[in-house]
Amino acid sequence: MAKAVSAKLPFNEGYSYSRARELVELSLRAGIAVLLRGHPGVGKSAMAQDLAQSLGLELVDIRLAQRDPAELAGVAFPDHQRGVLRQFPPEWVERACNGPVLVFLDEINAAVTRLHQAAAYQIVLERRVGPFRFHPETRVMAAGNLEEDNAIVTSLSSALCNRFAHVVLAVDHRDWLSWASGAGIHEAITGYIAQQGDKALFNNDGEMAFPTPRSWEMASRLLYLAEERIARQAVASCVGVSSSEQLFNFIRLCRRVNPERIIKKGELPDFRSGKASEPSFLSAALFSVAAWVAVAPELETEAYQNMVKFISSPGVDPEYAFLFLRRIRQRPDHFMHLKALPDFRRVAGNLVAIRTQLYR
Image (cartoon, rainbow, N blue to C red; front, side, top):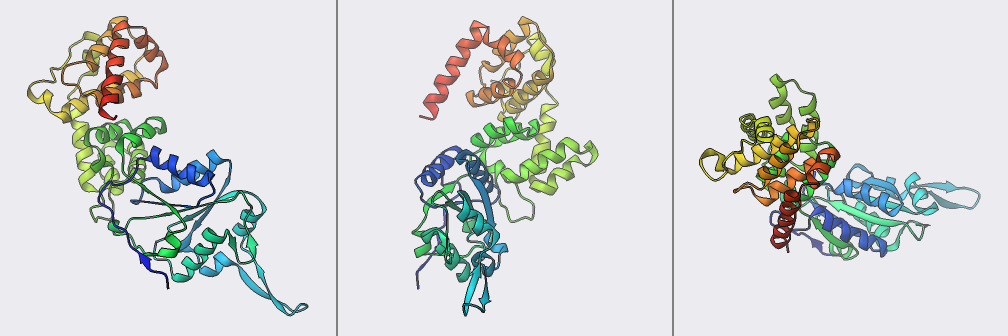
């Protein structure tokens, strides 16, 4: 019997979403099956959907833990005329054989039996189910959780593991923020995650509700709809009480900032001293000003100049300034006025140079 493989990883070891996606797509294009592992809710299923679209393939999503092994291999019926058992394939197998698809074996290590693994082995290694061979351009991708996440995980056989290219998807708040800026995630949440980083984006603390990229997206939808009197509890139902409290403490800090006075009158906080020097206040100030500018009508030239002074103020972290500009880019009219300013082009060039140096 093939040896079972059990792999534990320290927190956040792996690749960012963008790099993991690049590696997975490369393997799939080469005809190599991929096993993508990562914490719950970090985007494994979303990546499969994204890759299917990129590859021009229909996605066949199979949740192994929710399937009886017989559903994977089909059902045998007696053929009395020929005196044999005839196998009728499941509907998904016909699709994988008749045309190119992306077969996605989700939850491959979620308490699946040896029978499940035997079926998966045939799918991955032989690219068939029973006598039914897949289309030559059909690709196979699998996903599973990490053992340290308290998810129900069954170790996979070494024989099965050896048939995959293995990629681990890490928690990366910068990648998530890039996605969130175009996905309509509530600005308070993106501002809070930008301030707190990876540990705020994902923290499986053993509670029923805990923060993940997926649960923060759920919380965002509730935060848009909930009345203020129940907003805190609504968010807690998705990400847990502790994360909800920290988010609303961040929102409380944001309310101490007067964006209109900063942008229209140039009354800039001194981020080098006092309470304004605290990272939490700095993040809240940048978030508040960006949110205000995002809904403001066209401004005077002086206001755009104050905006440049604001993001280049002493004490402003370049990463926060980038997040601010990313939010402003969603207002092309404002961004066009900014780009017309020589001071902005100089500041933007310096920010790019610093960021390049930091992440070289």
